[in-house]
Amino acid sequence: MSSTGHPNCRRTDTYEIGAKTTFGGPVPGRVNIAVFHNDLKDMQLQIGYNSASSGPTTGIVNAGEAEINGFEVEAYFQLFEPLSLSISYSQLDTELLKQSDVDPADVERAVTEASGNPLSGQIAASTFVPIAAEGDELPYAPESSWVATLKYQLPVSADIGLMDVGVTYTYTGEQRAAASNSTPHDVLPDYNLLNVNASWLGVLGSNFDLTLFGTNILDEQYLTYVSGTYVATGIESRQVGFPKMYGARLRYSF
Image (cartoon, rainbow, N blue to C red; front, top):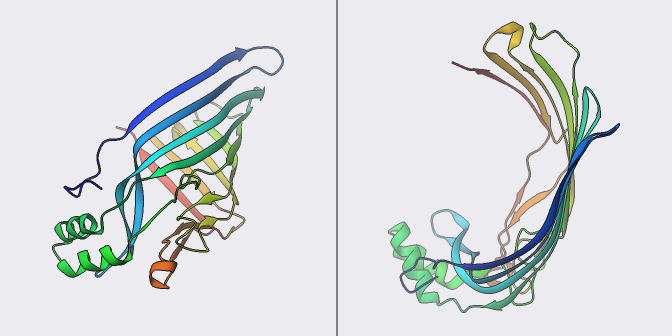
């Protein structure tokens, strides 16, 4: 956070090498691979603090210098005419190299200006904590994650429309949600999600599209946020992910 209360622009130097391939044969498809390295300066990260009006919340500051090393793969395979498989995988190695000092006076001034309440500014200045400390991994950058989707197109007449069903599995590895020196709950556990969907495009030759879906159908319990205020205030808040849900969407195209 600058002296004006607004974060400065960050600078990123990116180095990447990769390959994109397309192939035929019995199982046609494509595979894209990339290896990259990013150097970041004046990186913008969140801080957590307590608000007089809304409780634990966050703000944006310039956190310092960081680096990211990563590897990504995206692949698509047409297993046979109506059945396709797509997979994406990401591996990250991140580190906050330098933590810039945040002036409590800047936090107080920025929060007071945003809320119009001096008390909110005073509370924020006395309770704010960074989302990462020097040597920590960068927040919300899981070491590994991947997504796999299997889709089957139903063999129906084009006069009826296009119909397909699919299932998607996602894995999100452990990820930092707060600084290691601000709470014992600084890392969110890994989790798995399974989603299903069925779509009918151009219902009976009309302009209507119908989608039925189920998300987190195994009802996985997982965390998506930690305030990181335990050491500063003795209070910690968490946010859980969405539970199992089913629904439908109907769209009309003009």
